[in-house]
Length: 280
Image (cartoon, rainbow, N blue to C red; front, side, top):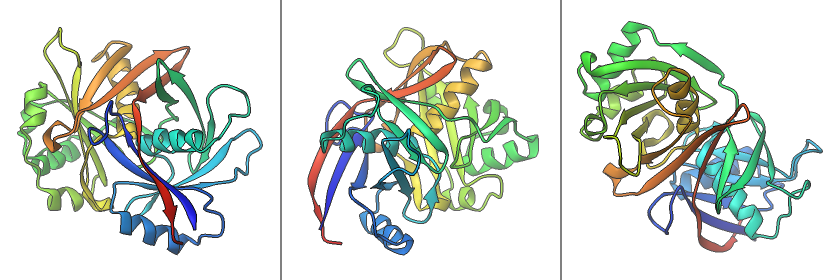
């Protein structure tokens, strides 16, 4: 029997965000067992807490979608940190925990009652070939002329991002998930558009990863981390803003992005929802 948690992330109440399943004390589980558990939970990600191999880390995290393992993902990072803290974890340095994962070390902090992670470096950045933009736009069901900008914002899952004219256009997308999964550009596509000024959120975000076993992801930390670098650097966003995600899925995700001291911090609410044991 192993301790098991499920935490709702980027939410202020249970069922409003994106849940992650967390298996504690995962030593001894094989890769095949971890993959099977992730397929069984059928959430966008399932994580496994392990002892760190780096002496500066508090724990090591492995992250699985229903079909593959990821070197990094954002909402699993926040949800797993909350689960680790709720289970009695104490950070070595007395502040936020340090997570070891496939992408390296990820620092976390408490941000006004929310947890936030320091965005890892991008593995791929820069402009997207025009032919690839056209291919993605067609799969997303949006005319090419509606794409105002595009960039690689990959910090692990493979994100390529398209900026559309406005939030209404983002919310109106009816993508062809089969075409997206087979597009040959990337297995992870993100779309963002601005809300009218003066509201409580600056952008609407949607994330599509059908090749990983997830059609539309409810709320996505890794994508928002990549967007936070690109949108600010390209002059599309202020250095601090809030993005909404999950609206079309009936969720109320809120992602807080802030540039501070040379870092991009991505944070949100984390609400424990399930605590128990896993018979494995």
